[in-house]
Length: 410
Image 1 (cartoon, rainbow, N blue to C red):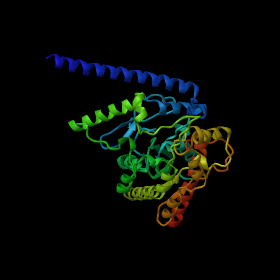
Image 2 (image 1 turned 90 degrees about the vertical axis):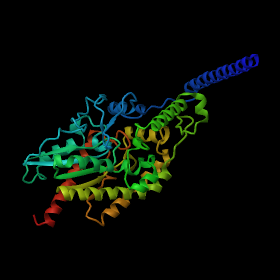
Image 3 (image 1 turned 90 degrees about the horizontal axis):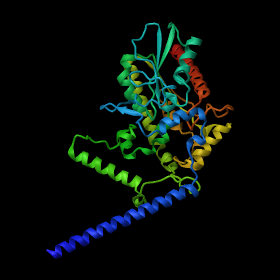
């Protein structure tokens, strides 16, 4: 009996000493990290490099208290109405889209639907009236050349932040019958070709569709084993993210700020997958084309520009590039910058589309000689950028209309 007691005492003492050692090491590591942050690391924040006019959007994206999106079980996402940071800038309808309520189409109304990611949605715009959809509607109604026999136009913005054309197809399928568009415009390219390195290449190859990365490896939580697996994974992630001892042995990639910068270089991945992702874009364009024939609307696709292609940079745009090249090299720093500066990332899409009836317009270099400041981020515009983009889209819509009239002897 005494032997058992002694063994139990020894084991308890050993565990207690081990816990004290771990606790001491953890406290020591936290002290070291604290002083390293003060004396060795420079606290770099995006807001230090990006225009103050964009900070409200920046705070919204960086806010971790509330999710940006909610999800319907069928795989569609919409904006979380409880996340109210952007209320002064953004007005969403009851469906979660940054646009009008869906109403029955009037006979004298030209109805246009805009699809795309965060730039099409209007990240950086000062209101719903100063994004692409808002400006385009105003231009059409003022100039009237596109209206034909119609008296006015309404542009419905079904774009979403972090969206891809796959998500656009879902939005279109579920709302096309209700909205009855005459014209559908897509404005995309960056999420599909550049930031898609976050997606699993095997899944892209298998399904030839882009998917929501936040839903990757989702499994039904009703199953007991799945619940245990999720809890186990969450606990493991929390420990790795918050306990300094485990961070030392973690394989998670980190971005270190100046002066010890560790660049996560995705340039080779982007370059390698450019053709695959371009093929998926063309495939999705063809899906939308088939939908258009079923619901009798015209489609025109616009491929979005990015800051790397702009030749005449403003002071604020230079600071944006400095941020992503040197201090926040999430895509690959200067190497990805050189790649994007010197590569027509839309070449394959344009070449393949030209062999079909697809109407695709590359806007990659529309701002390359613009002297005024256009960008708030690598792809998001200020109000001037959105207005100029809407004007260019309008001109292309007119050309498209004239070509259609000549072809059909209208």
